[in-house]
Amino acid sequence: MSCIFVFLGQAGNQIGHEYMKLLNGEKTARKSKGFFDTFFNTATNKARVVMVDAEPKVIKAALSDERQSKLSLYDTRNVVYSESGCGNNWALGYNFTGKVKNLTSNISLTETNTLVDETMERIRREVESCDTVQAIFVFHSMGGGTGSGLGSRVIEEIRIKYPSYYIFTISIAPFQHGETPLQHYNCLLTLNHIQQYADGVFLFVNDDLLRSITKNVKRQNAGHSTLMDVSYSVSDINKYISSSLCGLLLPLYSKETKTYTPFDTFSLVNQVIPMKDVNFVELHTSALLTHNATQFTSWQYIAEDLTRHVPIYDLENSNIKTIYAKAMVRGGLQTSHDVDIIKTVLQKQAFSPVEWMKGRKEEFQVQVSSDEALKSYKLPYSLTVCANRTSFMQLFNRVLTKSYTMLQSGAYINWYQRHGLERQISKKQSATCKVSLTIMSN
Figure (tube, rainbow, N blue to C red):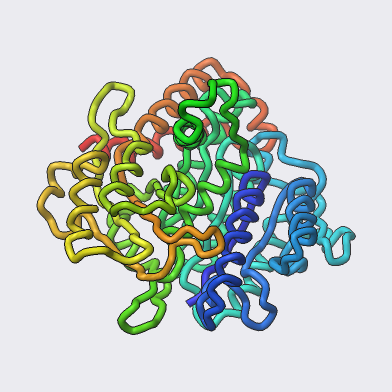
């Protein structure tokens, strides 16, 4: 059962590259036959990745880092790009017509083929090289033009071409006070598309990520650091997202049978995303966040430490509720009671269930792997939680409110109309995004 990855735009390629480096490190450290057949093509020994961007800079930087690090991750035939960009405009990205290039030949490809056409052709080749495709993962951001617009179009095309495959997105919401005035429109249009076409959306909000990382850095420097000394980077955010994904997607190892069980997309969808209209989930991990993680004391400590980084109140000071959740424990258990301890701590301190889920068996699932969490980082233990919560209502409300305000005044609408997006379509997208808010509120 294989997984195919599509990296779109600047953020998608940067985060995807960080994730693939982490996967490759685990592959080298574990040296277990079949462990990473899910993620790598056994014939070429390359990752099952398609890299796409409307500009070449970020892709070339990732490939340069691959060479300098002496890695062998990507099939350059699966790299397609243009040189004109998408101007931070969802409509331009969705209807992108710029000339397409490929690193193998570095010349323009078939004149009639768009970037979407070439992307789908490379996905097709990867699909046909697999015995069975378990899922397609799309990495992208929602605030710019390529990740949002082109990303929405590619996700839509994947759903049309492969209706039976699971589609998951790793979607990055921009900072609340971003760099482009169009980000709220872009987010609104993207949210509508990924809600409609993806089976699951792993949504990461930059403001929340930065808050967690900053808090952790301050703790590590407590007692000998001032606020000015605290430093962090985009790379720190990318590493956190990557380690979160590894905590969820890496195979589970059984010490009793000495076998690995691959990541199961069917179970994830049924346990965490049982309702199609509420398919936005969040990921939290102790990996790379837990202070002095290698000095393991107990699973209770790790669970308590993780919950410190999880928001429990919204802007109206109401409790954030959990619809469904799943925890992945890596590193084995100390006692037979550890699973119950982990569930109790997580539910009591951060993942309180909605009323109609309390007491049901499905409300909180825990899976255990006896193997080390991240061998390449020498991290023996980690706890990762995948949760379907009402926390995203804040983001949805903010995007809807600001988009409506701009729409009513006609702000920047002509920028979208010139690329084929009519005003009435924008209103339709706004209305459909209210579905998640309605269901979550109930």
